[in-house]
Length: 446
Image (cartoon, rainbow, N blue to C red; front, side, top):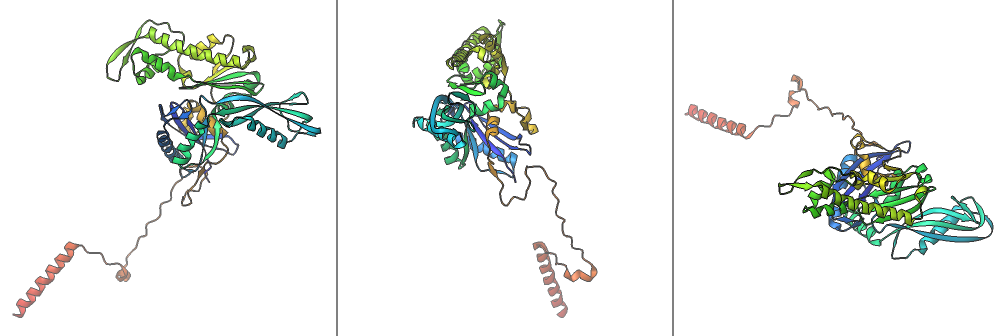
């Protein structure tokens, strides 16, 4: 039986689908990753063009099924992120008549009370526990502790209802695929990028995307802040367009020659336009445009960390950065200048996650999609009943060819052999031969 987890990430620059399974040790093995570049059909986490996103999802689904055949995708996990995703502090309280042992049912009831506090106009994605106060004592885990009063502290992860509504339109209504679960992308990503030690010591995970920048702050292994900023790498590209370039030309120039910090050269760079015209770009102007926007984005990241009430000295593990926009040259150096004294590192998968050979080299380019796979628990595929392949994974198997039946005709069994079917020419030839023979017999009689 084939058992695969399947997840989709709907990003502003590309839509990614991934499939994988857990081996006998529970380790995630990534079997297939497929993506389609998409611009302006998903903006800041929200689907803008339902038909185009549906077409991309359908195409990726077919590509994944080709990779994991004979398994067929029957449902999927979907990541949720974007500008409207944020975390809000909530507290739920309960008192007991006498000293009691707190059980799982009590904690679940408090979680439901927290959910009920949230306004109906928002979509609740997750309720994350940040700790408990039992009879005035701080406790990380409440189950099994005795007390008469309990305060449960939570981070309620919410978003605009339109995000899930449009995802449903693409996947459930158009593609006819059930959704196994919605996963908050930022939480799943932190789980595969940050180590437990980093979350204990205090760190900030910054995901620089195409149109958004997501900041997640952890301290004492607890989520302190989750906020999404409405700015990303595409803002830098649009600023470069002020140099009289179209979007694709500006994006190419940003990747090839843009620097967020440390520009020193005074030379110009040649750029071949879409009209096949070669122009010279003033690198000094390009640098000033890129640096200005980069500094603005990083200043907003710093402001979010301060808003969480976290001092730099509290983030002992420093900053961990991921996302396509973080690949811009000079980005890490600019962060180090801005966050003086803090460690800055580029994030990669820290868990024991394996991948098939084709995906191994690029697995860190799809961290968010892999994170969604890692968070998924249910089998998302089924094997057709008429499939002749009964293996757990699509491993090539030698196929035994059926032996062709050969009939040997012996003299004793000639009459048992089927007569050879004669063609039209042979039958005409026999007919003329018969006519000629009959004519000769008539002449002899005469």
